[in-house]
Length: 310
Image (cartoon, rainbow, N blue to C red; front, side, top):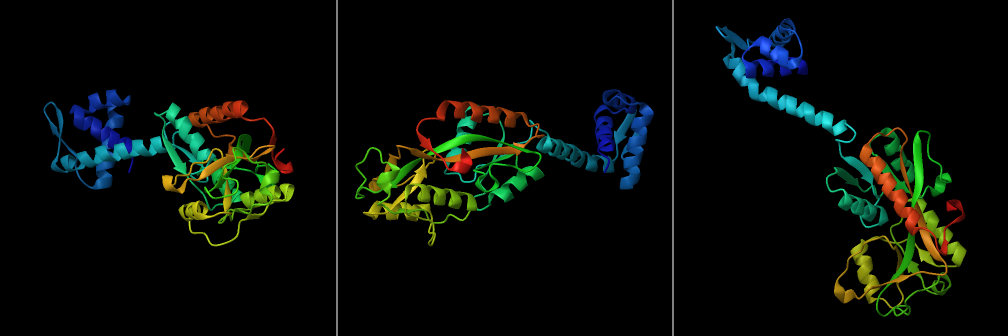
């Protein structure tokens, strides 16, 4: 259905005159008449009856009126949904528990008037996520880019914006529970469990970490969820896991879990934000500026990252 014809029908219905409707729409009276006539032919009904001072709606015109208004409102929503700056910014944070989600939340708190669509492609590998960005179904994603040597496909751009510092998460009876900090060397005698990793990027990163510092990191085994793992850690005298400083996990106070910074050096999980070079969304530009500025103020210190991330 021709939306211009529907718009003209509404203008005539509201003004009661073809000339007045044409003036409002910036077209000629003949143009307005042709549009309405075309709509009448398409619907097979008369929409207006002529009267001394103009026109009035017929019964069919009155029946069409509310639907025509809704049709134009729907068209406006469609336009808004795909117009940069008006549609929601769609960002893949990988998981709502980790640093990208918390950074996006902090950005939103500074700009509560923006529209956001927060996506968590937890089980998608980097190639899949980058394909979504390239296709325009995502505005941006966060990945380490380990398996592509930090390169992205043509048309995409990337910037390293997160160095997520590691912390050891242990229960109150773990031998390191009272430590204020731990070194990678001290972790060599303590097994670390990280079940459920399937994405080649984090699996590869933790393999690099284990090989560099002689750690035992178990990424194999059944997955019963984060809550089950936290309960196991709380009851264990030897079980531990690694979490990012920028991650967010909640547990009952009775668990008495401890997050202990890893230092000398501090291993960091490097994450880049990836976006389309031709993406004009103004909120995306602001978010990228926010990420870069924050990274400049938080990166540095005695940290370790794999060779591919340097």
